[in-house]
Length: 104
Image 1 (cartoon, rainbow, N blue to C red):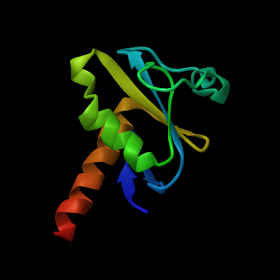
Image 2 (cartoon, helix red, strand yellow):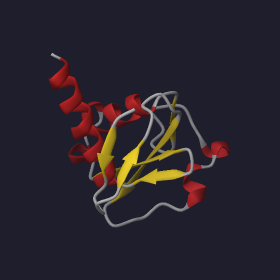
Image 3 (cartoon, rainbow, N blue to C red):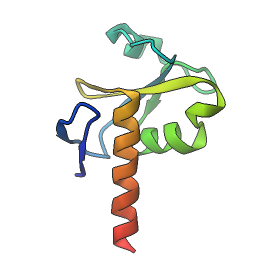
């Protein structure tokens, strides 16, 4: 379970194996809890929200497969009761990359 430091300086431990929900919102918009409601989940390619079995997959998807720069929206990921803002997603992705590099 990797630890990472959030943009606000808090340390978090989250399991990469937890289920997650990803939403894309324009820069400056903060999601409401209802953005993550299971009843609103649609299958891709619908933009919001997207369900993932694993947090790690949601983070990789958000940062590499559909990179935010390509469409002008920011990724927000809900895991359990915690919502990761775009800076948290980037920090967690950097932590995942560092762990992978150290494992080589």
